[in-house]
Length: 203
Image (cartoon, rainbow, N blue to C red; front, side, top):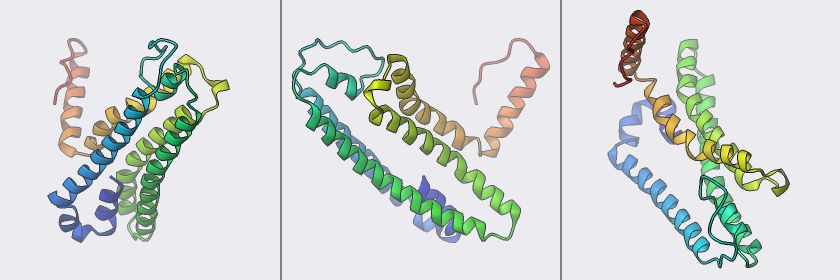
């Protein structure tokens, strides 16, 4: 998404060339492939652990830290290894996002039109908000001290980084679509005018 925003704002005349279907397919394949390999590493490492405290965890999500607590072997090196790999993967993505947005903000601040700057910022800020929510809650989930850990806090943090960003993404990006805005406005007007028997939300 950061590269898409970069091309749209910094190289708008080349957008059709740089963001063609082949480029989109390549980036999607890279994202899915790296995610699959990363999850495969986690899964293989987890299933190789001997569990001596049962297999029930007090957590809605099957999080790695909770599974490691059930192991009767020394998991310190495994845990450190997984954290290092995770940091490397996230750091690469984070650097790419930061570099893209530095270029974007430099281009936006040079725009003479205030309306153009406002439109560019409104395009970028929802993506940055979702990225910040995901990274901050994921870091809290995996790097927080065990002394401040509690089941309710862990559940909220896990929910925030694993469920909210994927659920909010389509809403954030589709709300810039004028047709969707018009349909939503029409639906809300109809609901307010009738005040009862509001139709189900379907667009």
